[in-house]
Amino acid sequence: MSAAEEKIEIENINTPGRTTRVNRAKYEAMRAALLSVLPRAEPGALVTDAKTALLPLLPETLFPQGKTAGWWLKAVQLDLEAKGIIARAATKPVRLHQTA
Image (cartoon, rainbow, N blue to C red; front, side, top):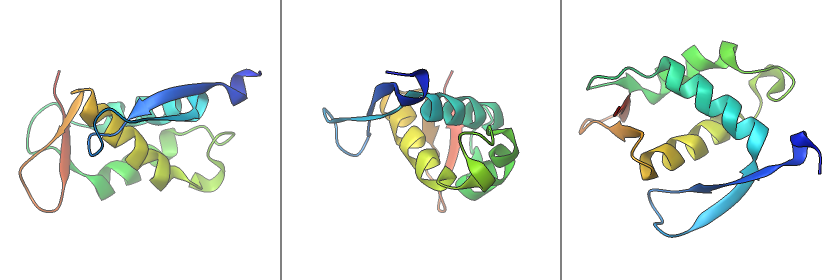
């Protein structure tokens, strides 16, 4: 299996105990981009603002013209929330921040 096809298991805070296998390279690229734009303090960043900020950081080879970035952002967000790496502030609309 090539590196581009390698899979990683991710969690979802909304469905504890269930994992999903996804493309490792895309996951890791989105994770790095998301963590680089999220503040460490509450209330955090709006998800839409985080997406706008991280799009230029994504490799064009994995996310041509930002395609599928929204899905990957949500998948990584829910996984990092399940792992306690990021959290939602108690606000509407949703704001995210790093926990550590």
